[in-house]
Length: 208
Image (cartoon, rainbow, N blue to C red; front, side, top):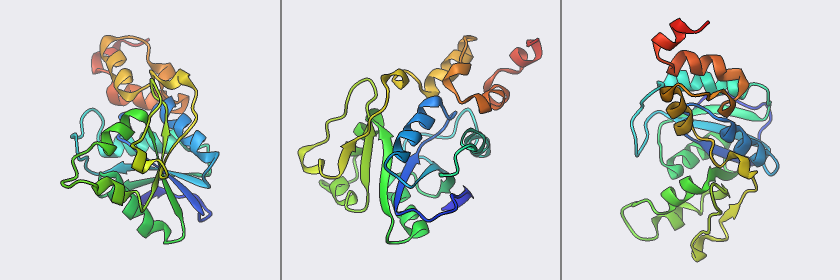
């Protein structure tokens, strides 16, 4: 794990927010801030390679730039790059970086929780074993997440306002492609960067 920025104090409770951040959105920041209510630090983790998709749109370095600028106002936010892309791989890299005493909790939305819990890890019960190394805090996203019975001691709900249900990086990119307003979906500090990275050159040239 390589850190772009790291909070100054070692955390007893670490929140881990993995994502593709293509681009970072207001929902990402809201999720991280909700996590700070229970955690000493939240680290935004951008994998160098994803298990289920390729890098498209913004490149790795551009996404780190956007994350750095979007999170610069909070001293308890850290930014890191991971080699692995699965939650268990990211948690292990955090364990190696933060030591054996830190309590690790991965923050995610309902859609991400459903995807990773139901992922084919090659054998039955594999994800339940992974949960021995970390917990999940799951924010509602167009509905609450109900974990399998055997996982409920390790997967807990995280309260977040419903106003973020429709805020996603996919929606940002779709609005840009359609020429519709998108600026309110991303942190104000990165509007210029998002415009530079994602908007077609002809739109930028024609902008007054």
